[in-house]
Image 1 (cartoon, protein in one colour):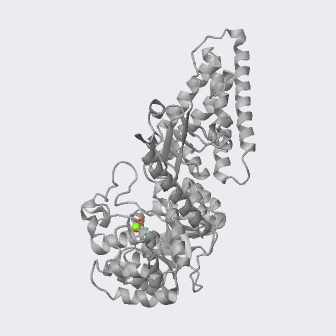
Image 2: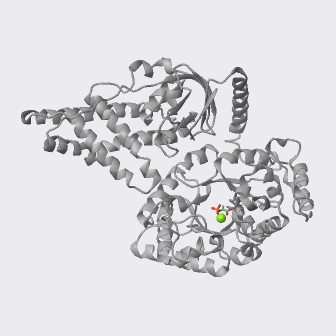
Image 3: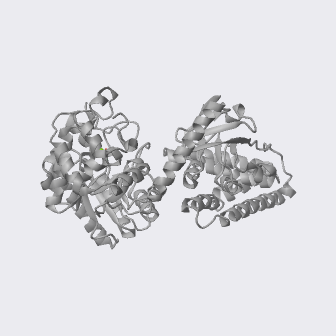
Length: 587
Ligand code: PEP
Ligand code: MG
């Protein structure tokens, strides 16, 4: 047995025989074309371009209507590239100026395009280099009149096998999926590559970035892919195989059971409806959000748009991103949180001036940073407001510690609205505004915040950090990070009760909302809206539909009277009942 590690892109365990694909190497060398034949060479390039486009179009037309929309979108991205001047005309100019063959000209132009993408700061855009290669290779193959893989590799013989290749384009995956491949492994590609995104959307177990996979894996080797970890086991022995088969069965059964809950409303046994929303950070998360049957996005963290780059995205770029998320959610509400930069997240290599304090978690972060840089904040507010014309949106403000900050932020929001009204730019006049309660001071004066907003959302990740004075990023003090600390629970309870008294909805969007072991506790405390990672939502729903609020209220009231830190686990065990499968791992 041998284990190879790669990058996890989709869950699931796949067991099967390897089909190792070796591409026919495209030999590309430069030839000088005599002047009278130049136009003929250009015509040859145009024909290859046309053929490649036609092939891709045919693949696009065969995508079944029930496939997730991203699948067609990925192939469309490649189709659009055929209209790009740099790809269409660039090689022709090179053929003319260098008097060289079309293959060489295309290769040179590909290198230029690669350099452009190489210099991009955004890892998502950098990953788009793969797309250029996929399109260029298809044109090269047409120039050379050959298929990338020997034909027999793309027929029924791949059915049920695990395909191992250097890289696979979305179009190749589409073809292979139709042939019924069981899973795939690629040597290249990252978690952001379209190949990875497609695997997730189609639910095909996969591991990408498994370096030198084809050096270690031979044709017909037995393989196991542990998709969640991105690990590939080559030639497992009988005992190992049995173990993986059993895990595969368990996982399938659990998924099928949970899957049944997707369409079921999140209603408790005694008939109370609970709102289950999902957290998201990038556009690609939307598919998982919908898969999990979420009622909407309860927290969209906007930082991903800003991280890993030197300059801030402008209003137009932000607007585009928000619109794409809103459209992908097809009418379900999207809660966009304004920037939470600072602490561990900032733009560019350096912390901004003023944010290099000795304790960044308590320094210039989130709303504090935004209020210090109103131009940046207003650009985001305008982008969110404009996007609100395209579908239901709520704005949420992070890390508020005093009412004044909230009032300043609301004033800037009003200003942004006036600007848009003046220019006739449409936006949702009734867009809801929410305050995150994640600083103890805010929880302790929740009524002050509640009177200015439409909803509250408890950010337990920070609320725990600030209540217990435990740096959430520091492993040394991780043992003190306790969601069940009575002080934390007291602040959560105050927020839920305070919100209810003020007549505003209270949600929870920290990790605690997605931990099934806490679901009953939170229901008993009065929480009626949860927002959590899509992967945990169905498990939370399982607890909800199996809970009776009338009993829970009293049980939880008694449980909360226990004042001793660390003393609540046993009481929680009793509350959660005999089904221990979803209880705390270490309880
Ligand atoms: C939180 O603090 O609970 C929260 C949801 O925000 P973040 O994790 O992004 O700080
Ligand atoms: Mg937070």
